[in-house]
Length: 303
Image (cartoon, rainbow, N blue to C red; front, side, top):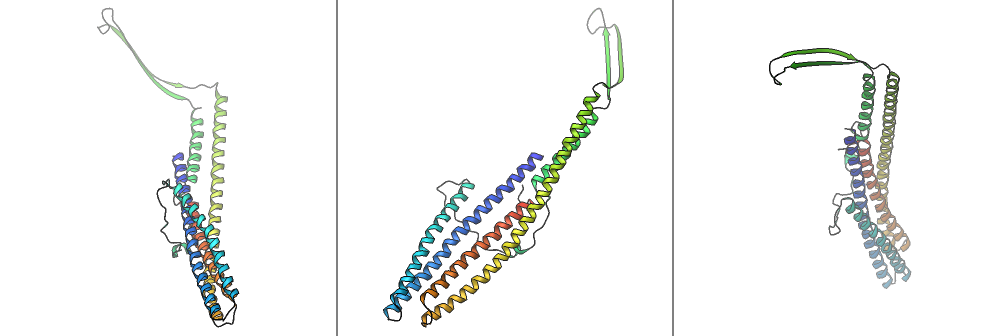
């Protein structure tokens, strides 16, 4: 039973590993999409700067700076695209899928209301603790077994004898014996005392492992809860920052169109919006991963 409990814990660990790999792959693909959006906006800015240069409203430096920003984003996208391909390959390897299968994450990188709820602290579903509890129980029974081996044992016996000079089962004299005996070996008593002491030591060790496992489980749960709370706070901050960056971009566009701000201001604000999108994606990813760690800490997927 303890081995079966350990196998359930191993299953929960595999669920955690695959869940983390899935959200890593989804984050990497969403980062590519966010950079594509930023690239499209940067190209639009470069086109607008070129048009205004042709009209004599700005110098050629604006168009060059815009094209430089496009090149920087393009180079960043190449790296992020490679990260996404590696993350998808790692997920396919965990799932034991052949190379011919194309993995495409479909669950959105969003956080629903249930992820904001305070997590439960029940640790009874953890397979590792169940295994330690069973081990302590077995060691306790081992002490009882060692004590029982020192007690006298009760034995019953019976014997029937048949005597005939003619044939084996012919008529003749017969006798029978029946009795009860108590068997006790007092001289190996010191060895029995040692066996009881050894069984007690094994029980104490098993109990110490159980107590250490429970303390470690409570520590892991507290760490997962803090990680989850911090990820929720970071997501809220990232969401507000993204909204501020979007409003700032509208103002920067208006200022550039009216000639009251240089192209560098517009490009910087556009970069800030792209970075805010990336930060928000990372924050959502962290919330989902933290939720998976909470499930692992409480043994939700130990089965």
